[in-house]
Image (tube, rainbow, N blue to C red):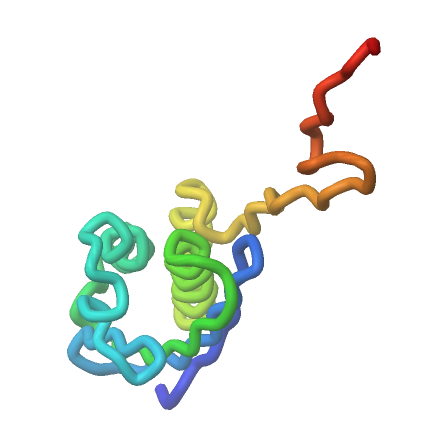
Amino acid sequence: MEYINAIGRRKSAVARIYMSEGTGKITINKVDLTKYFPSAILQYVVKQPLQTLGVEGKYDIKANLDGGGFTGQSQALRMAIARALVKVNAEDKKALKDQGFLTRDPRAVERKKPGQPKARKRFQFSKR
């Protein structure tokens, strides 16, 4: 197995990953996972597909993350890892799909409408 690449998206974040057999090292934008995501919760989110299949120390992952915030980026990376794992072994698809790692979350920020301060908020009504 050489490199397997996959892409994941969430909100406006895009994660492109290159996965190969290795020792379990995850590098994001040439920075280690623990430095890029100091929060333990976000690190857990990124590793969820690997933990679900029990292959945590088997693959090295190099990721390019772009756009969005911390949460969106971590969830986009989780989706990309899950897609790459399905490319490695198609039998794992059901386990990952049941956890919801292969489903693109369509929720995004609603656009601001003209004549309003925000997407749905209205300016205060004044009778006089």
